[in-house]
Amino acid sequence: MTVTPASRRGPGRAPDRIVVLTGAGLSAESGIPTFRDGDGLWERHRIEDVATPEAFDRDPALVLRFYDMRRAAAATAQPNPAHAALARLSHHPGVTLVTQNIDTLLERAGARDVIHMHGRIDGALCAACDHRWTAPAAMAPADPCPACGRPRTRPDIVWFGEMPYHMDQIEQALARAQLFAAIGTSGQVYPAAGFVDFARAVGAETVELNLVPTDDALDRFDASIAGPAGRTVPAWVEGLIGPG
Ligand code: APR
Image (cartoon, rainbow, N blue to C red; front, side):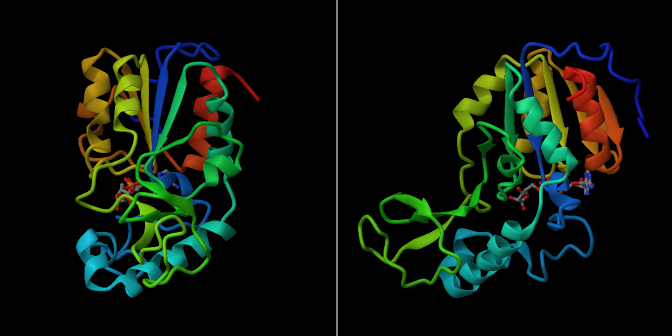
């Protein structure tokens, strides 16, 4: 269901500069649970118990185990038609694809240059020296950093209270955007939730694609397209750049 007028543009006539922001709803149909749908717990954990630097200081083994489970789940999940459509869009000139998701389903669908503002589940980071490497299947608090040897290994994930990655690059893309789309994100976590306001301020057309319109969607976006991403995103992409 489209709750606002359809795009003002005819099919196959994409603007020159497009920024797409994706969230957990993009991967929901691949079987990866979202954060804020359902019972408010995140795979049976409260977010504060597993996704903050304080939680990691308090109980690193619990946090690492939690991310080991998520890494295993992400590895077996398969990209859905929404990932495939955005992968196709990512090869179009002038498109910047930003995701809050830590899974790599966009890459596995063939997307290029995905900006992972909240990090990646397949990455490990040394909290002591910032060295990065591919995460093993299971991480332990005593694992030494391969570069400096100190036992400060953590997932390369941006936790609550930490600064998202690549903000300069994202802001540069937003500053030039003619079209901004937010896909499968509840718009509750900043700074990503503020990208639509930035895009509007520079005159971009804005659209959200979500299972259901988010709160105040029509105050915040020019259009809100409701439905499962696996259905709405391929149609939206086709409307922009034509059939694949
Ligand atoms: N298709 C489209 N949208 C969907 C679908 C679907 N099949 N299923 C759920 N959604 C929508 C929900 O309606 C909801 O608005 O996806 C959104 C998911 O919202 P959240 O769970 O809050 O996820 P997200 O916005 O990505 O969270 C942002 O919060 O916990 C942190 O760092 C984490 O990156 C995450 C950030």
